[in-house]
Image (cartoon, rainbow, N blue to C red; front, side):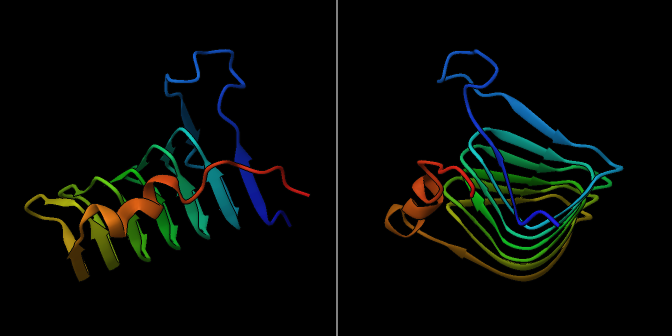
Length: 140
């Protein structure tokens, strides 16, 4: 089975400063580590860690079992694992979350299920969430 998945920035011919969105559809399941520089929406299942340079959205039917490190995370579906972001974690009313959140800001809507701990950290602690995955290297 695949161990690592990489989606490289700039492959679509757009300006490197503009963000593109990659989507894991509801019928998909990935096992392993994912490294992505752009925004990523998950409507399927991921069993493994995600390292993102952009925003990660877990859709209503999406489920992540693993750590997420990146800029921001919005949870509409389910996460079982730790989240470390440099900006904000948003737990929508339909979300289910178990784990440790480390972020500058957190928003929890009424109805969200949150089981775990939250640490509000300063920039120095969160710098790895901003730069921890860049630059990307080719897999072997």
